[in-house]
Length: 483
Ligand SMILES: Cc1cc2nc3c(=O)[nH]c(=O)nc-3n(C[C@H](O)[C@H](O)[C@H](O)COP(=O)(O)OP(=O)(O)OC[C@H]3O[C@@H](n4cnc5c(N)ncnc54)[C@H](O)[C@@H]3O)c2cc1C
Image (cartoon, rainbow, N blue to C red; front, side):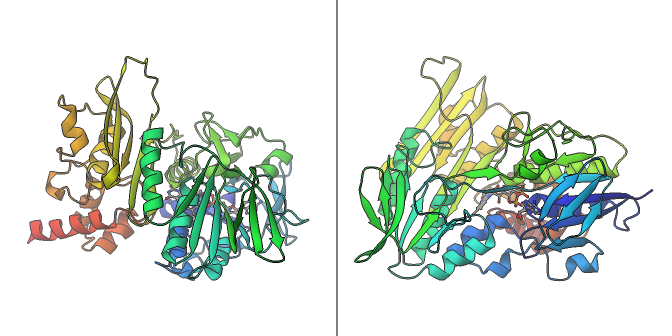
């Protein structure tokens, strides 16, 4: 009998799950799926919004599938519709447009929303940002930012994490005068130790960004003489035509909690990604798996695969967690961070290798435990990111001469500079989609004879896009090798 699956959320995890179900069961014989999403558009690649702010692509370029694709494949999606509540006894979902959908299996893929810290004057009576204040999360926010940007526009970014810095870099490229206000002693403190943070701060200031560290915004107000201003807790003020709030995220768990599902920071799931109700799953940023709530796309896509496998397959696939590698997507700043970055100086088990060249904006730190990479921060060293990520992922031993690692004298990683011939087959080329060199060469052998066709077959390049040049290089190499 065909199972009816309802997916709440038409974001990156929800849309991917529907595609994964369709891939496994194109005729819809085993499963029919319905996606219900609050946002007014078809699913788009949220990661690419930073490139929209930077003026490199348009909002239309972020769409995951061409218009009409879902209809052509008989996939039901309802956009602009919010799920208000679920009735678990009746196995039904109740929506803002009055519709009711019955399910055999239900999947929460409700993601997160931007967290707005308590700032007087930031929100209106309905709890929405006042005009000129944007909490950066969705395409509507992105379009509001883009339309406000321009030469000389004064922008204050609240929060110097990944999103804040990507937005700030984009605004700077559009000619805005940008100040980032961050409460800690250096930006991106979750991904950078203090020495790396100092190098990043220096880079940001050198490219023309004002960075206020150790500061918090307490209020946003309109001054009759000077216009809109942002007030810091120490009383200092900053003129601001646009305030972008990028101060963290909060998982969307309310509907799940009201339905009586176990919710902690996220919706609690087991290794099959089932919630406290076995008919209900949760994936992506709204899910809490083994106490972790992820904030990146790769885990959400891996979760989508696991759930698709469980709903269609005969076996029960398990999700074991994802090793996270974070890359900042900001023009002229290459930063990668993974695993353990802060070690206790008294911890004799940890070997900490560092290389600092602040004048040239370079910093590398690799933490090695038992001859394996346990973590790394790589700033301004794109040539070593592939190799070190590969060692981190695979748990392979590092070379005895540790300096070779830091200086990038090893080959074999998936970097722009590494020769495709030298990369091992299991080198991960597209992190967002966990696509290895072998997956790509297999696609080639099965007839995908261009970078675009290889991307269609494997999905490489369809996440943050930073692997595009490696896939292009691999494709060229395969053409030459086959000639
Ligand atoms: C600017 C920006 C840059 C980013 N860059 C990166 C990056 O470089 N690398 C990376 O890995 N990650 C990045 N991320 C994070 C990445 O986008 C998220 O990890 C990913 O989108 C999570 O997918 P999701 O489906 O769980 O949530 P979402 O994509 O947020 O989708 C959830 C959807 O559910 C909808 N929804 C919520 N509640 C309901 C309801 N009750 N009824 C109906 N619909 C509902 C929401 O409106 C939303 O459309 C970035 C995020 C942003 C904002």
